[in-house]
Image (cartoon, rainbow, N blue to C red; front, top):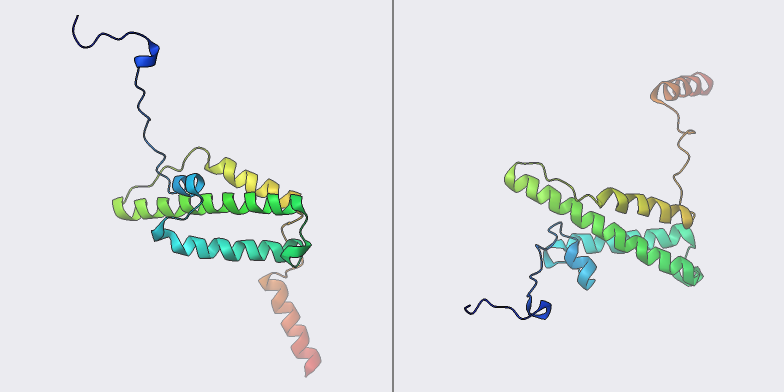
Length: 146
């Protein structure tokens, strides 16, 4: 036997598989945004501030649980935004549609659940008049106003 003889399982060298290439991997692993994704960092800063205003008005008014959920929410928002921008870049460069990672929809669903837990809900849009209703309202106002 030559040099290929192994003595046991401790001699087996496992090589890591390919890294996830959706653009969010480095964000999750290091907590830092890739340099070319500075716009995403600005977006996440805006998102966090907007969520704080929706939930409690000011960050000092958040409970510990709300702060933890908010941080997880922003992390998931960042991951999804990285995936979306990477998909757009790949599609633009190659002309082929990028297959979204299978976990993408679960991230989006988790974002929705966390928003519900924090009391951030979709605004009631049933009160917004349609174009036809607006036309009637404008006609009535013009008739009443002279």
